[in-house]
Length: 395
Image (cartoon, rainbow, N blue to C red; front, top):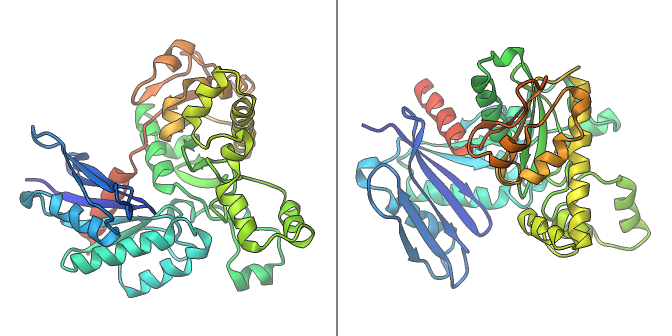
């Protein structure tokens, strides 16, 4: 008998889903619908709990509701989910944990849409469609920002007039919370240490990237704060820049707010630095071929990583473990070597062969390294499913 939770992650053109058995902590079914709204929209599903081939089909011009209807219909009858968990990027100051969805929750997700304009609106659309299709199934929202809600006050405030902050809700939030929470707990388990005794830095490096300082199991600071373009440079998002540049673009260069938004979110980061691509794997290949823009993008990304790791190690007065996760963190051995080679001053010594051969959960630092470096594949779906299961038990 399975105890299954369906986890849904809606993007603008893709829906990813997993049906997770929370007792065995394993995916039973996983799949995606890609290129939503386009003539070449396709859906695929893999049934991991039995020996059955993956299935795929065309969903020409399907919208999110039609795509979600296909997702629910693709689930075997014997595996009807006990609940649905929806990933939501921004919960503002409203949520420090997952919650069961009602109209009040939907309103608050909508209120946070200006803070995550690439994510919240489409995730809200997906949630409403899912509720309409299956109102009989309990549905929950899990927020990327929730893990970061308990930062110390000093690490949460912004140095603006405090009456302004109070009026408009300005503060430091944080993102990729489920990933940071999951890999920090897995790191403690792999090291056979109590997480309450550990100082960890978790690096979620993908199309969206953020670094978090986790001290005693609590996220005490993070690189991505108020908007989803801050911190590290990302695929097409700028990362940290001087606010004076934004003011200059608007006040002196005559750019509209929408034009500046497009620059910061869609034309900057790795794409802007390289002038050719937002994809780190492609940039790695191009750099090897001598492309100077690709080299600049990878060098700046590495520089930003090292800067944040150093700052967070100082904040926690030392470091016990450094974790790499997500697409870039798990697969780019050359980037990991670039970063770790600059961290000998905090006692980290990389094992080059371990790093080069790293697959799955593994330690990549040398045996005598004072700081342990690890690669841990993230599993946000499992983290969300377990969180939802815990809430189900409480209801």
